[in-house]
Image (cartoon, rainbow, N blue to C red; front, top):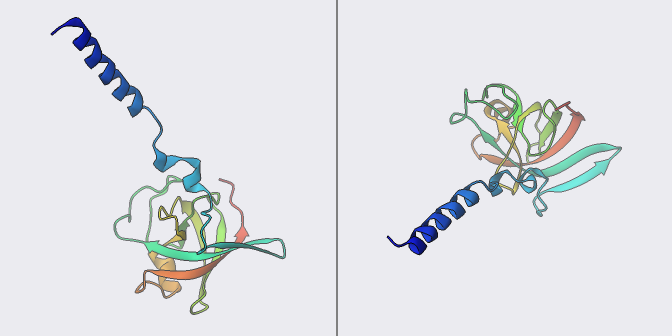
Length: 148
């Protein structure tokens, strides 16, 4: 191997190493801010934070795995994932299709599908009668902000 070819190979390998150290777009701040889509709107009413959008739920595949705040996910507890609400935030979630409500505590980050506003535990989804459909149009009303 001649010297210039060897230097070129080393340079290309070095560029790959440097590129591998770049931050992943999956974990940028934009992923955790409220999405600016038509399926979700923010409404301020009587100084309370109220949001509307599509919620989904997660269950079996994540049951027993660690959540973003370090707890183990329990699909049978009334918890939820939100991109930006502080951990411990208590939220009243109302299914706008049947007017059923549940209070959940935020202990995880998500949903990663940007058109969705919140991921609920299976227990919360059952209380909202949305397990069969998988998603529902919901209203989120922050009852108590968590301390993160």
